[in-house]
Length: 314
Image 1: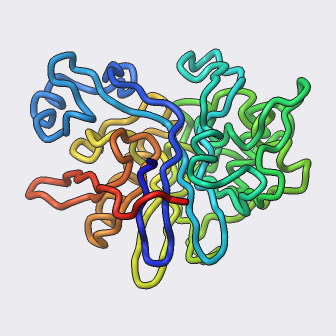
Image 2: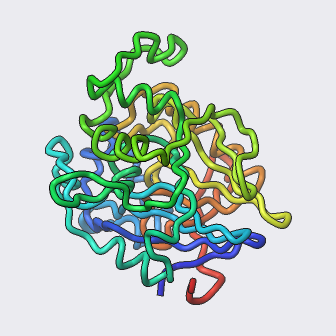
């Protein structure tokens, strides 16, 4: 049974793709020091950190939201068959993601909207699938919503359309570039099919209680997505953080952060916001249920996993 949560009138179900039990910390967080796990390892749950091996548990997944008669996906994980040689763990996958979606009672043609926190390989991959040697939309009736800046930067990164004004000066020089072909393989077919909607990330209400809020740094125009429903709030964090360890040590960047200092600033802003609001947070890479709460502690923040509060999502 998939992990499912009720947020006001919205039902939120985790759709899993990949899981790693023993990821090497220094491979994912290049600035990590011995002190990080020595001090904060005891705060981490066994499903997220193995103190014997020193390995971290992470994964990839999407979130299915059913609210106001709409079927919505927040991000679409990595996808099958995607050529990603620079990220071997994601290269040419063959996973059961669509089967997991079907187990939640949803077929691809039933998805009304796809909301994207950012355009990275492991968040937009299932936008398309390989059919007769061509990438075609997986969700043929869905409106795909994404940052106009993310899309322009992705097109420029793939050599399709130059964007000399990007990145904006306020972010500084990029510390890391997006993986190649992500826009070409996973975004362009959707846009060419007339299914794309590029927006400005400004916190304005979009649909069914959703709004996109700027948390740039991990990517050029990364958004964390807020859901308000029947007096309750939740956040879809995207990659503002990747593992509970970063809740305790927000200075730790991931290896894929494009703009390191802005990413840390966004992470610290988000942790304050989530702790003060008490909102349920749906993460993109945390293991276990993937959802939980940021709590205040005397010298920073702590993470508390949430447990599903509804049964079968169907």
